[in-house]
Length: 66
Image (cartoon, rainbow, N blue to C red; front, side):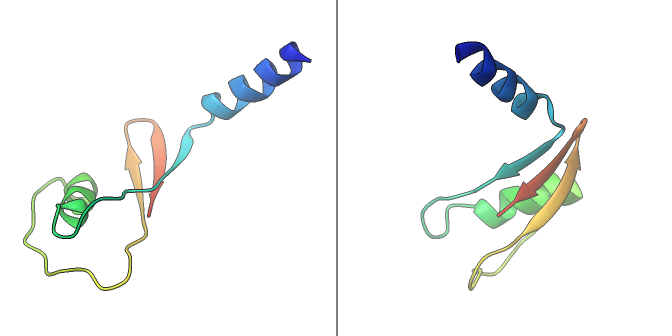
């Protein structure tokens, strides 16, 4: 049973695709961090209404960030 769990866990961590949930307080810089990762530079942004969903290629990973 333990070996089966280890195989599933190893398969999950070996994938090159990750899903991230970015949470924080109001005006904490979540959108700024998201767009800095996506564009490579810091941008000025207005307060976000709702939520952002972005897919970013970072190193060898494909990140889906909400």
